Image 1: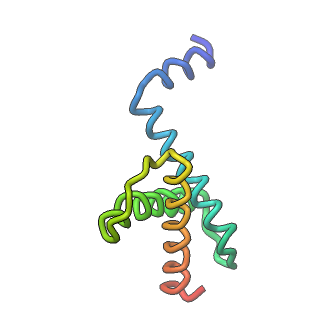
Image 2: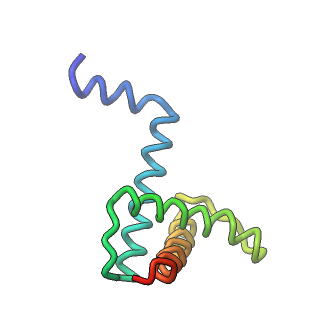
Image 3: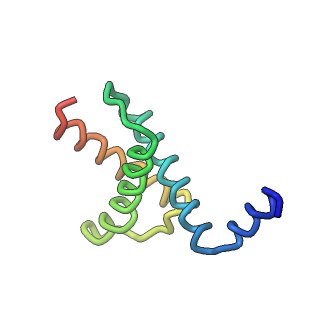
Length: 100
């Protein structure tokens, strides 16, 4: 089996595809949050993905329950926007806690 065949067989798995999509969403949201709130702290790409995923979770699942907001799909334009807002909140909290 060549490399493209291996890649195609891996991507046929729905769970793997979902994990990769969520990782891409987390990376994108985390990077945008770091651009909005720049700072001197050096966080790696794994921590950026984690902040982005946690921000998406905070914005898309927790905030609507707390504030009686509408729920958006995480991969919609509104969902990504509120995920970025959640990640920005987490970056600010991280900065306060770590005093950086």
